[in-house]
Amino acid sequence: MVLGGIALGVASHWDSQPKDQIATADSTAAEPQSGSSLTGTESGDDDLFAETATGAIAPPAELQAPSDDSVIWTQVVGAGDSLSKLLAKAGLDTDVSRDLTAAIGSEFDLRHLKPGHRLTLATSPDGVPRTATLEIAGGTRILARFGATPSVQRLAPDLDSVRRAGEAKIGSSIYAALEGAGIPTRFATDLELILAGTFDLRTALVGGEHIRLLWREHRFGDRVVGEPTIDFAQLDLADGRYEILWPDDESRQTRIFKDGLLVQTFDQPIRGARLSSAFGPRMHPIHGYVRMHSGVDFAAEQGAVVSATQSGTIAFMGERSGYGLLVELEHEGGLSTLYAHLSALNEDLHVGQGVVAGAEIGRAGSTGTSTAPHLHYEIHVDGRPVSPLADTRLHGPENGAPGAAESRLLVDGMQSELDRLLGSRG
Ligand SMILES: [Zn+2]
Image (cartoon, rainbow, N blue to C red; front, side, top):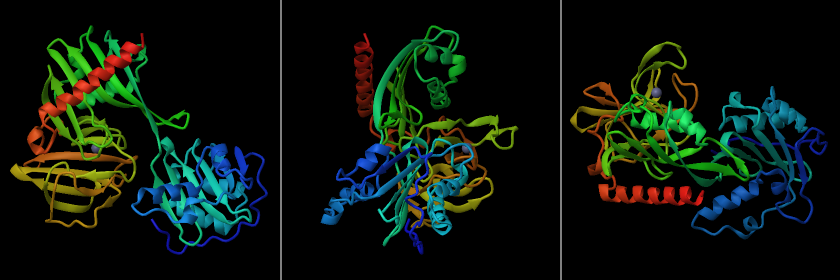
């Protein structure tokens, strides 16, 4: 997003740096990037370069040699801190501080500022702000640039992912089994949610079942950030072997196999997303009483791309009570899909227009009755909500999904990786 009229003045008290700051780097020395490596954050020039480098055109010479004389100021947000409090600590003038707060606030709701978030300011040696970076949960950064072409953008974390494997024999409960084997217990919920349309995991487990799991841990530098992501599970039940393949970061499909055969395909509206809430009766997170949850929820970052799960026609786009910003698509056979709590709609689309499966219809958000960014997704049959996981009419290999044979190859790959990782563990 480009800021219209932001123009920051010189911060007069800039170089009177407070004593309680976490890290400082006056990178006026010859070492380029010394400020960045010292503070564990990036200067704006790095980002600018990276951004340009992804384009087809080579960056101009002046961008290839980022200026390295920025003065870096970093502080971790503490309890009771506000952005303006932090900026006052940095010695910024009120006017500059206000503009900067507005800039960051345009991409991040500052009421959600939390202890542990990290603010980094970069200025020229004479105190003119160049960039402000707010690092929020999971290594996501809000970067505001100042100067001739001011802008604000949200940068996805540049995470390393480390693959992990584990296995357990289920005794009294799946949670206890996972915990005992050093496997994140949240995967019990992932399993229960994804299997909800196939069988009830809680009642299916009687004890003695064997489970094997593959997951990814995310690291930003040397810190583990965010939640681990489950990729694959093998569950041996009395009635057969279930294998569940969750989508990787690029895919929108979850697949469930029984005894080697593909029995369920679930097309998801967000790439790589994991379910966070099931269809059916539940305690409402805001109203506090039991009510029907008429869809499923996906954990999603604010601004994540939301895609049509199937081709169809746009029946509704706009605000609806409780749902916030909503898109409703109509499909063949009296089916429709709903995508709610969006932060933005795809403005290239209009009611009555056809969209293909995978087309971007909007961005995830937290509009309407919602406590945090997520996507609420519903499937209706003849106007009534059905469980998106159980209804097979919209799903299946005929909808452009990879065929059963290709899916099986992916599962075989996961099984060999499990064998390798569990085997090498000794
Ligand atoms: Zn929901």
